[in-house]
Length: 433
Ligand SMILES: Cc1ncc(COP(=O)(O)O)c(C=O)c1O
Image (cartoon, rainbow, N blue to C red; front, side, top):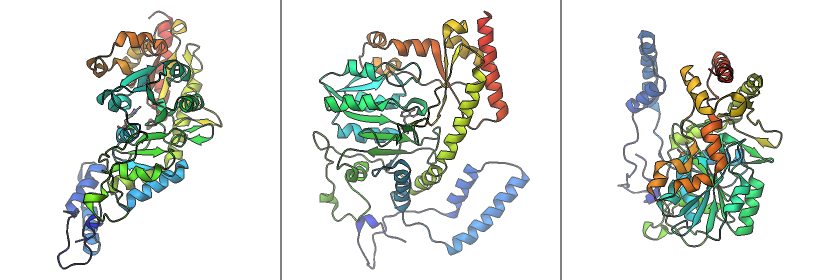
């Protein structure tokens, strides 16, 4: 039985066997059965064959010494650093946990203002909302649904401590003006890069521009670390070595812990030290992440081809505004397809189109909407209608112009069906049907 390296008790007759139960063949077989589901005689036989082989392996193999925060986590972080050109990648439980490190570094609390885009997912704002900071909602660019830097500029006050651009659907936010504003006003930038792993802005990978960036590897993202996971990066000078400590109560497991009483220390924040959380990840998640990182470019290329196909089919309709595809310097990840219409030309708005697509069996993605319309914001006492008035593009786009469609794992026939369904639906709307 391997001893738990964290305690560093060394060679002894009675080691500190704090590792606990590792795993056995049964556990492993259930994982295989879960990941590769099936039924019938052939499936049962194949599973039996695997079982025999796994039992043979068990007789000659040893279990890994560590299941959490070990060499696989380190290797996954290295592969992400190599891929992004960063030096701080820290593998955490999810993207939201990465945000928490950044928000704590900024010391966000009551009296502070955080500028978030009007359209994103609730995760972006959960931490500032929960600690009583004031959320300020920036309007969007109607072509990308991303935060509009001009509206950010209008909404900065002396209390603004953080700007949180979200690269919606993996299309990079226009970062230059945001970084310029941040520098001028001594504001930190946290990129919500949940959808943007591998995206490039003016030749630089997302994750190397803002003070912090956090990516999601939840099961519905472009790549996943077995269902959950996040990578957080930083460009804050001197903070990269603190990132691992920020993940687990102030400790870095790459070296033995000498003294738990005194080695657990606060993390240096921008204004004051903060107490780290526990966002540790497992070796198995890390294996999944490293493997999928190595396939990321291939996956983005497939998604791009799908977006190009949809753009080329939908070009037949003057009421559809084509999804931006990027160029040599701007490379999106094509996490979702942005279907954007001109309601005047379409003879109806996106609500009607969504209904028609629904009837034709084309699914659309419901949860990227005005952040200030999530009930929790009203529950926290915000004046929703006043905020809505300050975000006219968001209101117009969400209610009348856009929806997101899936882009991956579909057959050619399904893509063809989707494009035809969109074209037919808009034609019906134009004909007043
Ligand atoms: C824009 C955005 N930000 C943050 C998150 C949170 O990611 P995670 O589930 O990894 O915390 C999501 C997840 O869907 C998201 O869509």
